[in-house]
Image (cartoon, rainbow, N blue to C red; front, side, top):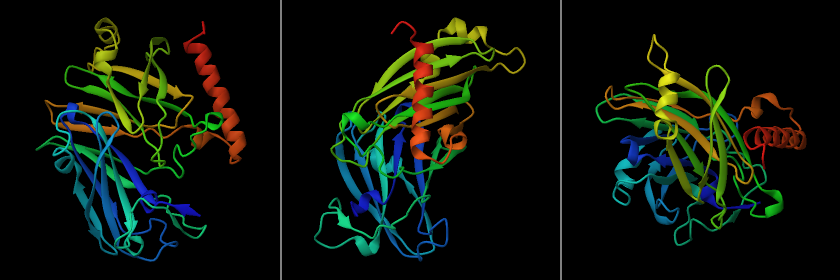
Length: 305
């Protein structure tokens, strides 16, 4: 099957310049399943996109030797290209044996059908200079947003209970619209809602995320100050909300970043699509249940439509 070596093992990264966080990524040359791939070296590339989703530069970073792990300071590299705005970057691991001198790394090559590099995840770490850090691990799902046809679009359904606000804590919802198809041009439409701890729906809105772009939403800027104060817990001073959202036309990667510049601390949650835990193994059955769930959420959030 034909595939670009860049898409064998990759991870899209949200560079959060507006939040003041530094970004590092940790990579390994080892198969996490142990049994599939013999230890070998990997070439590491980083693709940097502009805030508008235009590819600016692809950089070779280094070689990871067999049986080794490496950290790369992404912010130090991308800040030379985009200093103040949030934007997308993608880190790629390519087996060194597939990097041929004189050939274009983007060109597709034929590989055996069993080229399973799943679970080669990256450790994505955010931190304040001189402070603590928070991290998550994830990867680009196979074939992510590959199909550009309108009749077979991808979709997303997410929820989290990790959105909190206080006098010292801000909560950011980060959404990534990425694809393994370089011709990807879909603008993702994302609908979302916040619920109070009582279960009452207290806020509904929507946004868009351009191709190869990210959307960073500060919960404090979204919710009315009166609502935040109304939901504040008298004991710990936290205003806590449950967030849910969906996109009917694109698969999206989603995380919540809770940060405290005063304390120089940060916590990160990469919400796993809950249907992965709850739905049956049959793919078609999964899709039908997921679409039914999104239709139900749409009827609740936008009953007039």
